Length: 190
Image 1: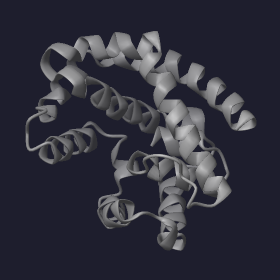
Image 2: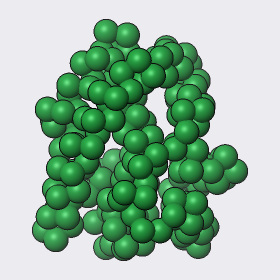
Image 3: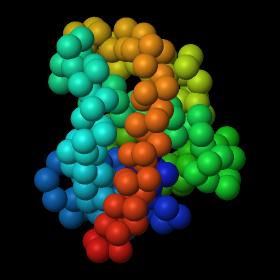
Image 4: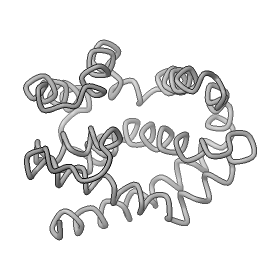
């Protein structure tokens, strides 16, 4: 969710930012704006993984989830963005979600097969809107755990989210101001 939000109003950057996890190497086969979105996604991931506030949160999770701690933190941060959406965006989250799903439908042939396969599930369960609730995040963590054949134990991470909720939210709020400034600069550079 944060990747889509951080893309701004450029539809091609949004698409690239959305599909980037499934693209390896140079994204030369895509339109220039989509390529830019992929590069922005990679820059966001690098910046996030190295950020001291994000790393502080992953330390809370590392003992139980090891290298999945970063993935869990991404999901937690998507929750706080969705929960506090009105603070960051003038368009209601429900409309933003619907508009993004329409963008995906209108650009279906641009999407790689992995994204095409995920899209119907994402839309049917309105993933973006569901991130605003703890129930939605619990469902997302369960689905991610299932994708790892339950090796990650991510289903249980909802417990840490509840236990350290105020700490995670405060960290997100500070971190998100930093990442917004970073991405604004990065979009201008790329």
